Length: 239
Length: 259
Picture 1 (cartoon, rainbow over the protein chains, first blue to last red):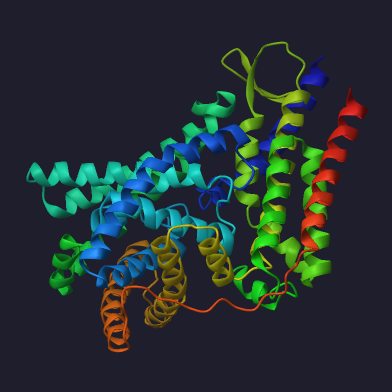
Picture 2 (cartoon, rainbow over the protein chains, first blue to last red):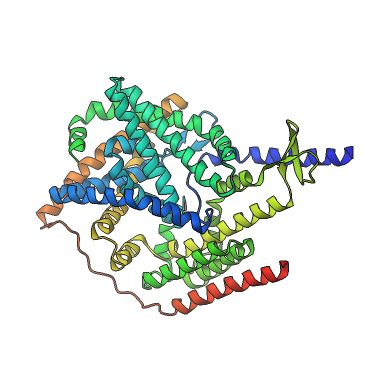
């Protein structure tokens, strides 16, 4: 009996050590991979995205009709979102990850535009980099291009209304939007087998430091933008 | 960048993108709906054969691409694997925590393995499209499928600008790194932030210049291009059916063996 238990403990210890090696890798794994969700959930998340993307598309269409220049600018913004998400982010525990750009995109372009641009960027990430997938496009779009940006945008607007200093508002918006994205992803994964708490636990270990880093990064970006490109930011408000 | 380079070199590059899209999507959907590990493994293998034999991709490269989503899959499946059991349950490996056993038994291991291989098969199916079709062909194909014109144009423009901007970001990064800009977390963050904002700034100004260039060449609100000449690729339709039939055969064989 005791030898059996010892064997089991030994096996478990070996497995745990193996899993520890995976943790830093998980930092870059925020997109739900192709084929990970059952077919039913793929359809559900796709359907949930439709109204948001349609609303965003109509708002973009209106802007482009008013000013044809907006099309080129929006495309540049989309490409910027892709390049931003491909940057390597340093983290406290030495692992490398990529920023989500959720907060920055939402504050710069607004949540409506972000839904459409996010959809396109996620499609390209799936096809070009194999981050995410075609069947999980709906789920990823909902967490990263709809839910996260809406939270970021609301936090930013509320804090600015409450007369909080700009860096605080930007930091809170980016970090909270980032965290909310992971909560939604955990929910999307956990709802399949009822293990949401487990996913939240795994993500909490890796994502809380990353959310803080991304918040700081967004503040730096905003400071530089404010210093050097007042006119562009003002034009963006019109866009 | 990623799959793009190989897509341009593929032997199927000149084949009409629509049959490629259909083959890829049927294999993907069947693999997902079967939900079995054996079908997933068979799909990944079949797609590997098709990509290397028809597209001429070196097998080594296909295996390399299969490894990319591995990090997510490993963590996701490991999380799915671990359950808590009442003390005394026969388990394969577990740690006693607070009077319960945290670990996995045979059934959980089988479920996690099935999930892992199903996802691997789905990734393989997606690669048939991604490694044989350049994005420009794909967007043109989407236009033919009546995806709104504005959306397709945005995709085409974004695809083009991705390369322009990543080149800018790359050279700024080299310049910063050569001036010790990435020593330590604090300096890395400030360098990275400066770089991101400068890339944004340059993107914005570049967009202005591109718009001026377009307008001076008679831009009237839409970028129209001629479709390329494609080989019809009708042979891919029966191939898609054959792959689906093979997947279902594996499913029934597995059911027959187990049940």
